Every structure is written in structure tokens, then in C-alpha cells.
Length: 403
Image 1 (cartoon, helix red, strand yellow):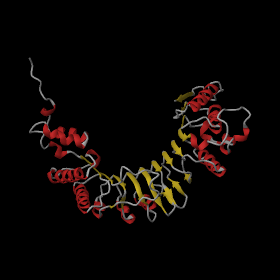
Image 2 (tube, helix red, strand yellow):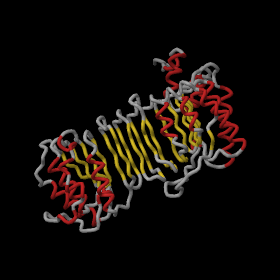
Image 3 (cartoon, rainbow, N blue to C red):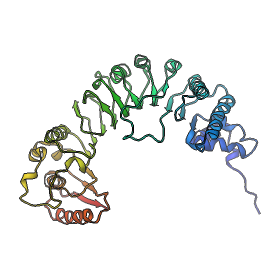
Image 4 (cartoon, rainbow, N blue to C red):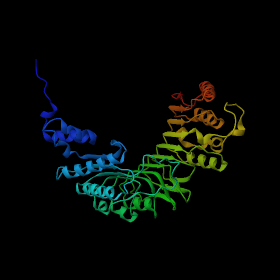
């Protein structure tokens, strides 16, 4: 019988280093038990992930986790490049924890890290619990010495906004669970013109947030999730923006120069009662002239009233539906619409009816009911039957209800 050979172990070290770097860091460390040859190979990985959640959450095992970080740093192969380092550690305020975190960050900078991810938020925090979260850690000053950093993710980690202008190579930035101070976003975009992705989650500020840059700004993707701006709005002036996602309470924002904006995802929470908000939603969607994919939550269309649709029910029509013929994307670019949390309210049906009858280039409308209540499901099935009989402006339109 022919012997079974370990073909992977026959590969040269240079290829094994690449393989080690492509698998999760936890699995890379485990390869050390395979054989003597594999004992130290993991020390050459370019992707390091220190995640406290891999350890059981007792205080004893937290110290095991911190000790693990120390051992990994001390035994890492000298002169090796760390392309990505991720550290997840809830509440690093303890003196020993803080020292190890600082040592870990210094190690990443010394190894020429390109992608740095620091998350000190608690896994038990929820968006409802904390309205104005305070960061639990301060970013090390040595980080700003890294001129090659391309991706920076900071969660519950403060930073001096004036230092951000040194990151000229940054392409992706994520900020979460902190206060944005002194026009930090404007400073960031004005000086780091290579940024293509900006993700802001659960942040708050006393100032107005303006995502404004010069013509050279390359920002393509902007995500604003569950943030609280005291000024009540923000301005987006990004000529290359292609994707915009906003999830949170009704907040006024203005998007200029959106000729490249192709995909929009809007979710305004559970409450929607003020008619003035209706005008805002209409004017916002109307300005998306070149959007190809639009995702909205049914909550933004709800009004008190019956679930079922009436042909002569004009009293419940909303502002932007009444003036919908001015939505240029309906007849030029909009191909996919997704409606989430659909429950069959009058205004949801009116919008759906409007899309079907006026979307001349629409290819697909996805309606996600996401509600198991028998009454809601029955009403939505009646709506589905009704919509399937409506004349369609697009011969290629497919309407899909998901329960």
C-alpha cells in the first residue's frame, strides 16, 4: 500500500508563510503542534488577531489572554512584517492591561503594520444603553509615526484629532463608541485625501459633522450607524461617493455632488410621526438621481391607518409620493429596491404601487415582511396578491415577497 505523504509540509517556507497568513490567527498558532517543522512557522504570519472573546470570560482567563499576547510578541520572528494587527479587549483600564495594550500597539508599529484594529468596547453594550459613550482608551502617540498605515479601526479609543493629518496613506477608517471632538471628521478628510471608506458607528458630537473634502477626496463608501449629533445633521460633499448607508433616528443631511452615488441604504428607526419628516424623506430620495440600488425600512413609511389598500385612499398619500414623478432615478437608473420590515401599512403599499407603476428600468423589488404575527402575514399576502395584478412600467420587473 502506498504511503500517505504530507504534501503541504513539502512546500518551501516562503509558501507556508503565505498559507499561515491566510488562515485565522488562532488556527495559525495551533499549527505549532503538527510537527517540529511547524513549531515556529506561525511566528511569520502577517495577520495577527488578539481577541479576548476566544477566551472564556472569567478574570483568571483574562490574565491568560494577556499572557498569551505577551508571549506572542516576545516570540514573533524578528524583521517580519505585520500587515494586520487586531486587538479586542473590553475595558483595558487596569494598569497591567493598559501596559500590555501599549506594548502591543508599539509592537505593531515597529513591525510596519498596515491595518490596525483596536476594539475596547464591551460586548454587553447596546445602542439603547449608552447615548453618549466615552472612550476607554487613548491611542498611543507612536501610532502617528506610522506613515504607511492604510486601515485604521478604533472602537472606544480616543485620539487627538490634530494628529490625524499625518496619516496620508489611509484608505479605510472606522470609528465607534466615542465622542468625535473638534471637527475630527473634517480634519481627517481634509488631510487624508486617499480615504475611500469611512464608517462611523455609535459616535456622538456637540458639533455639526461635515463630510467635506476637496476635489481630490476619494471617499467612495460612507456608513453612519446609530450616531447622535447635537447639531442635528451633517453635510456630505464627496464627488466620488458610490455607497451611502444611514441607520438611526431621523436626522437631516444634505448630499452634494452625488452623480456617482449608486447604492443607498436608509433606516430611520421605529418612530415616524412628524409630517415635516415626510418632506425631508421625499426631498432626500428625490436627490438620489443616479441611484441603482435603494434599501429602505418600512418604518419610514408608516402612518396610522388601515393595513389594506384602497384604490381611492388619497388621504394617506405622503408628500414625496404625491410628487414622485420628479424622482429621476425611477426612469433612468434605479434597478433594485429592497423594503425591509414590511407590514402592509397604507403608505408602504402606496410606495410599492408607485414603484411598480413608474419604475421603467426596475428589475427587482424585494419585500421582506420579517414579522411572524398571523394578522400581519395574512394582510401582506393580500397585498402580494394585489400587487401581482398591477400593471408594470418595466417588462423585466420581478416582485418577490419574503416571509
